[in-house]
Length: 319
Image 1 (cartoon, rainbow, N blue to C red):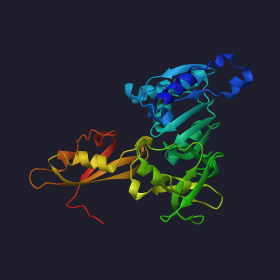
Image 2 (cartoon, one colour; image 1 turned 120 degrees about the vertical axis):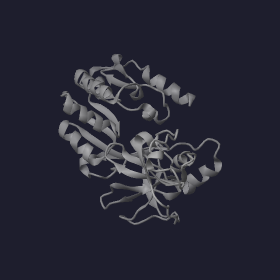
Image 3 (spheres, helix red, strand yellow; image 1 turned 90 degrees about the horizontal axis):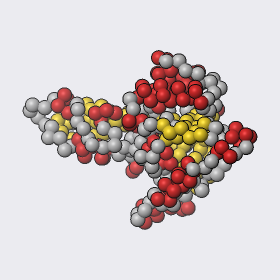
Image 4 (cartoon, rainbow, N blue to C red; image 1 turned 60 degrees about the horizontal axis):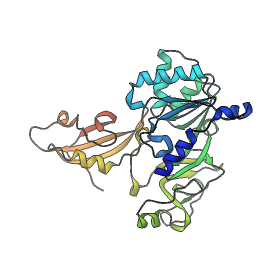
C-alpha cells in the first residue's frame, strides 16, 4: 500500500510543463469524474485529477458534492479546459448526459472514454460526443488491462486481448473450451497481481497451472472478441457502479432485523448502476409487512436502502 501511495505521489509530481509541445499533445487532457475508489484500484480516499496540458486540476470527491453539481462541474471543466479523455463507471456517464440535457456544454473535444456502462448509455454518449471513441474492456483489481477495443467494433463485447495479455477460457476441469463456449476467463500478463497477502491456499487455487483464474465466465466469438457472461457461482458478487458487493455480506446484515426469517440477495440489471442489489425476504408472522423492512440499512459498502430493492415472499427455494 505504501509503495502504491509513493507511486501515485511520484506520478502526480511529474512536471509536465517541461515537456516539449509534441509530448504535451501525446499526454492527453485527462478527466477523472469518478468516485475515486477506482483510482489505482487501491486508494479509496485519494483525489481524482483532471490533467490539462500538464496542469493538474483536482476534482472534488463525488461523495462530497451533490450528483447534479458534480456533473455540471465536470462538464464545465471539459468545455473550459478542452478535455479529451476521461474514465467512467456507471452511473457517471448517465449523470453527465442527464445534466447535459439540462445545461448545454461543448464536449466536442472529448476523444477517448474508457470504462464500463450500459449499452444504451454508451450509444447516447457517442451521439453527444461524435468525435469520441468509447473503449470497452475487461479487467479486475487483480488483473488490469486484460482486453480492450472500441465499443463500436463489436457492441456489447469486452474487446480483444491487449498486447500484453494472454487470455484463455477453461472449463471446471481446467481444460480449454471451444470458440463460442463459455469458460472461466484466465490470464497471463504483467498486469496480474502478485497474490493475496497471507492467503497461500487461495493463491495456490487462483494461480493453478500458471494462470490467474479471474472467477468470471466469458466466451470468445470467431473474431476473437471476448463476451462477458457471468460471475462463477463460487465467487458470486454484485457490481453496482463497478464496486464489489458480496451477497452473503448483505444477507447477514438484513437477517439481523427481527422481522426477517430468511433472505436471499441477488443482482439485477440496472440502467443507472449497471447492476443493482435486490433482496428477497421471508418475514416472521405477525405484525410485519414489506414496509417494515423497506428501509433496512445494511451498513455495507452500498446500502440496499439507496442502491437496491427489498421484496417479500412466503418462502425462498433452495436448490
